[in-house]
Image 1 (cartoon, rainbow over the protein chains, first blue to last red):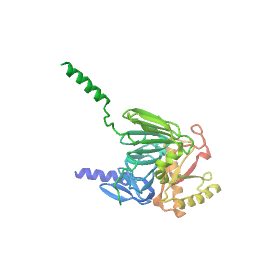
Image 2: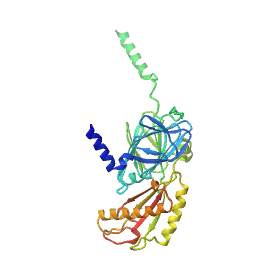
Image 3: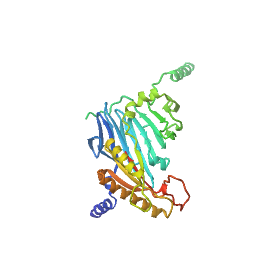
Image 4: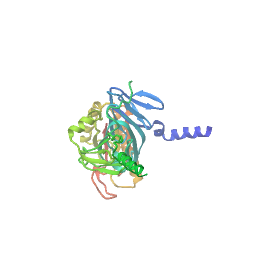
Length: 153
Length: 202
């Protein structure tokens, strides 16, 4: 147990990026927009850092836009839920992976360096399909258009 | 006995004709846009009924009542109707600037100094701005050597931007070595235009 803690601390010191894990920055935030992280719900203000594992949720009048480390852009319309399942990016080689899931709502996306460097490295899941992205701009709607996320603050 | 058989036929026919409540059609809509760079790329859609591919701009895929995927062109007005709010929330696209150093020197060329001034204006115009300083080299030398050299150049320029008043917390330096030539050349070719630092503001 103690050894595991020591190893974790050493790994975090050796690779600060693992400890920080910032994968994107909120650039646009309208109405109700939150980030669910570790059981907490945080208001998603402009400038907030987005982490791998975060779930981004908008309310009835909400919208949010995020720029990711590889220049990918993603934005959500109202009553939407997007989880950032996996994001890895090497700024030297441009290799990486970007996987997210749109549980409901609308997503507008512009792929970045990851999709350009490695076809099939960027994927978006919906409850009904898996979208493989190759250097492109695209839109996704899943679930009933007016189904509320129930987020009110 | 004969009558029972007859009733069976009637019952079966009734079952076949009965309007069973069918599963609702999934309201999903997947749209490929024409890319800003001129090419639309492709969107591969894998689902329970197989795989479909969108490969031209302004085409949409939606589910049919039988669960198959139907692809068809989609009008701009329909895109706006379904995705207007998401599109309006899209962050501004990154802007990039190139700077060159004078040969064997720490000094920037005159054009490059002007680019730095424009870059500072851009930084002020983005919400929560980030600045990426990305070094590039020509093809002289090994990959390792050029990875190090390109990172050094980027770090040097990063320090200079911080002197210009940009918050260091928002500036990252990285090196791409000889992976991204602006002027395509073979290996081990000196080319001043490839020895550059790119500054991306986003």
